[in-house]
Length: 207
Image (tube, one colour):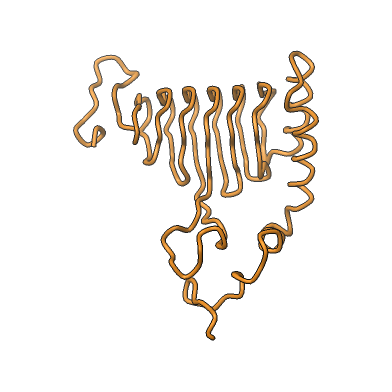
């Protein structure tokens, strides 16, 4: 029986266990991933002020880049941190999740509210040769500008770029790029306002 064809080539990946595929995909980052799991577990729930200081020290070492002291609140879950870059005065609140395997770049003075999810990869749902659970993630980097506020329970999907000064309303699901200083909300997120006085969202922005 022929092997299934995926992305124009034959593959034996469907015969691998999840663990085997994970090791094959992330073999260069395995030590980093194990280290962030253990150090995250040890420091994730520690209260202030000690918790803030220890989490900053841990993720200053693990992040690809960190601009200055950052405020990582208890019970934030950060994974594949080798792909995460943050600027100065970064804050992320309790329950938030960031997965940096596809790359997440965040500017200065960014606030991320409780239970926000930022993903930089997706399951390959567009292929049909194999079950989605047996296929590697599709990477899609996320970029977030300066002076951005992402409200509680919002979701930033892979491949999105958010401009400077944007406000993302609580519970919004951002699936498209957002222009600078827009206020977005809803599922999927649409422009509902503008931070600059007298500026009204255009028809194109509201689309």
